[in-house]
Image (cartoon, rainbow, N blue to C red; front, side):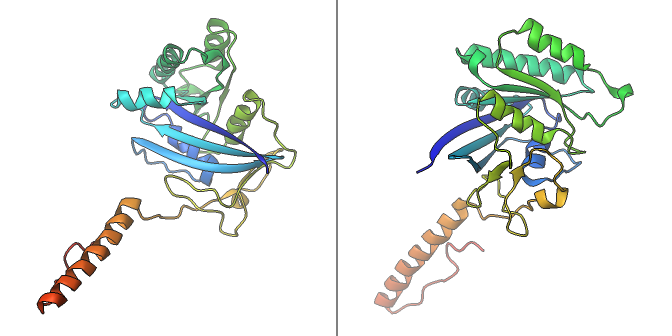
Length: 261
């Protein structure tokens, strides 16, 4: 039986920096220009890693800091962190520093935790840049030495360096990346809802990364919430009880009670 390795990756950063866009670009090869604030989304994936099954839980957190209890819990249960700022916002970079301080305060082994710091929106012109690569690198490696960390820039919009982010987590976790790429199992599922590729093939983290965009696309599939399915099952059970009671009394039960379309 293949060995299993599970890792919980938590994204942190300010609102509008593109945390969700990075995750969705990697998982589904999709991008949406419209910003929709995230409360908390969980994506679960399984990958074949040589003789090992790698199980990855990606927790995409809110960027507005309105849920401190959820935030503390997500940090406490994380095995790795993706800290995201926008290269056109000094404030978003300050938020990343605050996020790191939270990690350091809550995790005594923070120096052993894989952390990737990402400057998103590298597709913007240099005139709009507010955070330089040098300043970001200096903060991470000079002010905070001896970390298991890496810093890079990416563009979720242009799909630039997205796979490098997740490749970095494998390296920082000291997990080998097979030459043929990281193959996602067909049985994988997403907490927010996503299916396999249209042609039935699995997603791969290719090395080298010259795979076509079409072969990496994973259109989302709509799943019905569990709560609604449970209500339906309960409704049917209740309806059967009503039918039985109605038959015993020679009446007709109302079939519209407790029915959710």
